[in-house]
Amino acid sequence: MKSTHSKIRFFVIVCISILLPIIISVSSYAENYPDINNIDKKFYYNTDYQFFRRPNSGYVLLSTNKINKSMAALLDENGDFDYTSAFKSTSINFVYENTSLCKNYLYIIGKLPKPSKGVTIGRLDLSNGRLIVNKIIDVECDFSREFTSDTDGKLTIYTAPLGQDINDISVPNVYIFDGEHMNISLSPQPSEINSEPDKNNPDEQNDDNSETDNTDTEKGGEKNKEPEFIPSDKTSLTPQNYYFDTPVTIDSLQSVLDENSLGQKLHVVSTNNQEVKQGYIGTGMTIKTLNKKEVETVYTAVVAGDLDGLGTVTNNDYRILYDYLTQPSSDKKEILSGPFYEAAKITDDLKADKSDRKLHTSDLLKIKKLIK
Image (cartoon, rainbow, N blue to C red; front, side, top):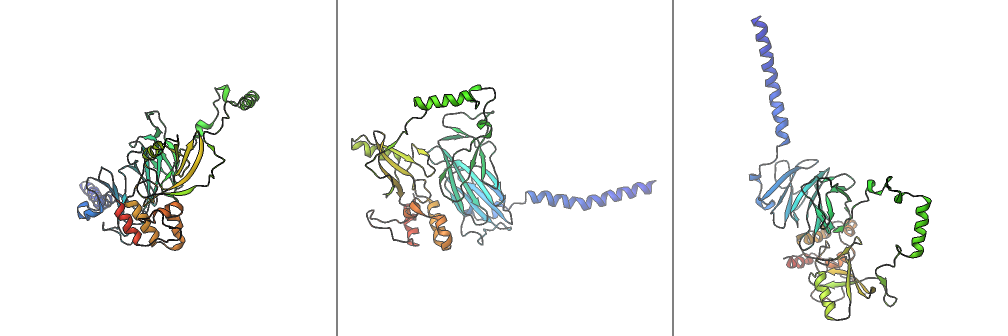
C-alpha cells in the first residue's frame, strides 16, 4: 500500500516538474516586453508609455509627454530600435488618450490641438512607422470608454456634439478612417437603428398621407428653402490657391475683412466639406468670402509648410515631406498632391511663380525652420 502511494506521489512530482516550466514560459511570454531601462531614452517619453506586439515580430513602444506630444518607436525582438523598418521614431503631435490594435495598424486617439475642439485619430503602420492622421471636429469625446477598430477601418468612438453630455446610456458613433489622405475630417456613419422608421410613430410611416404632406410642403416652400450661400453670377466659383506665409486663424482673417467695412463674411469648409467655424485655417480648406449671402470669391488655402492640413507647421509636416522625397515616384502622389504639394514650396517671395518648381531636400530645412 505504501509502495502504491509512493508511486502516485512520484508521478505527481514528475508531472509538476514537466508542466511548471511550460506554464511559466507561456505566462511570461504574454508579459515578456523589453526592459524599459535598456531602451535609449531618445525613443520614448518616460512620463507615460506602453508596449504593443507587432504582428510579425518585435514591439512598438508608444509614449507621451502628457503635455502636447506622443511618440512611437518600432523595436525588434531584442528591444533595440528596428532600423530595418523605420529610420527614426514617429512623432505624434497630440497626447494619446486611448488605443486600438488591429493587425498591422495601431489606432491612436487624443484631443485636437487647441484652440480646436474634437478628436485627432492617428493610424500607425507597424511595418514602417508611417502615420496617417484624420480628425473629428466640434465634438465631445469620452476617451475612457471602449475604442475599437476593424480591418475595414471602421472605428467606434464615444462622441457627441459640443455641449452634449456622454453618459451611461450613450452609444458609440461609427467612423470610417481614411487611410489615403492626411487630415481628413470624419463624420459619423448613419445609425442603422436610427435610420429605421419608428413603428410607434405614425408620422414616420411611409403611407399615402405622408407623401401628400411632402408634396404640400414642397409647394409651400417651408422645408425646401434656398441654399444658405448663393453663388454670385459675377464671380467664377473655381477656387484659386491663396498662399499664407504664416499660420492664420479664422478669427484673425475675419478681422482683416471687418477693417475693410464691406460687410464681407468668411465661410471656411474643410477638405471633407464640413464647415469650420474656429481655429486655424489649414492647407486644402476652402475659403469663401460672402456679401449678403452671395459668394464673391473662392480660394483654396495653402499655408507655407502645413502639409497635413492642421494649419500649423510641426514635425509631422517634416515627416510627410521626408516620406515624399524618399518614396518611389509611383507612390509620391499618395503622399503629397494638390495644395499640400504647393504648401511644401516655401519661398520668401509669395508672388514668385512656383508652378513648375519641384521639391528638393533643401525644402526639408525650410520646413524645419518653421517648426515652433
